[in-house]
Length: 84
Image (cartoon, rainbow, N blue to C red; front, top):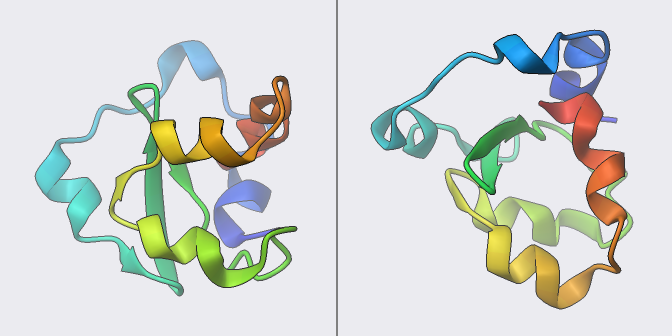
């Protein structure tokens, strides 16, 4: 699991921080990778264990809502909660 996932496991999802697109775009490398889905920001930095491999980093610093829906089954977003 990426460092974001470990750090955020017990985060209160009602009080998530707010980020601008400019801030999200700064996090575009595998070592510092943020992605957005449905207006929520996920820190997937160093998540090389992603079942689909390093492809997850191709959307670092960007929105992945549509591409996520195209390649994942319904209910897959549950696995993303630790990365909020």
